[in-house]
Image 1 (tube, rainbow, N blue to C red):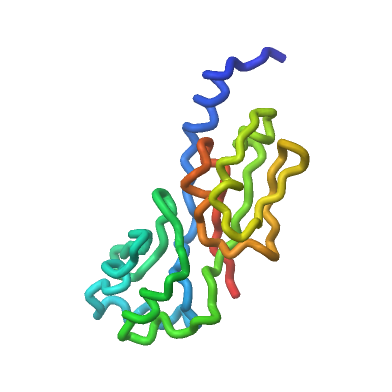
Image 2 (cartoon, rainbow, N blue to C red; image 1 turned 90 degrees about the vertical axis):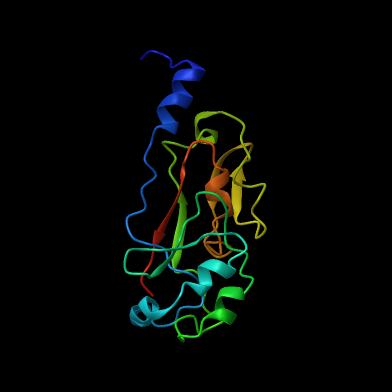
Length: 161
């Protein structure tokens, strides 16, 4: 088996699509069926979001885009929602974060802590200096690790609750 050059390795992993299969919805949603009320709104949650991660799809339904930043759970979207869509402060983002070990540079022997450093919940555990994994009980699915990963190895998927 031939050994990849460092440039070849990074080139192969950064070309991945990082496509999220279903939209990740903002926190504080208790009843997903209430999203149908969003089409009558003026996108107040998108305007108030300091991190600018709340976007609207073609149906004017809010979803989260973690490509540049993450959710701080500041509650401003909750406070501004006048359609009773964001109505439960106990609810967090209904998603699960995981690391694709085939894409993760640390799982391939490169020292990288890009995901661990921004994690305020200390939800990323490294075995030695390598092999990070997500601690599900600690992870709030905020997304800070996603945009920081240089190889697009951190994925987030909607979970049904």
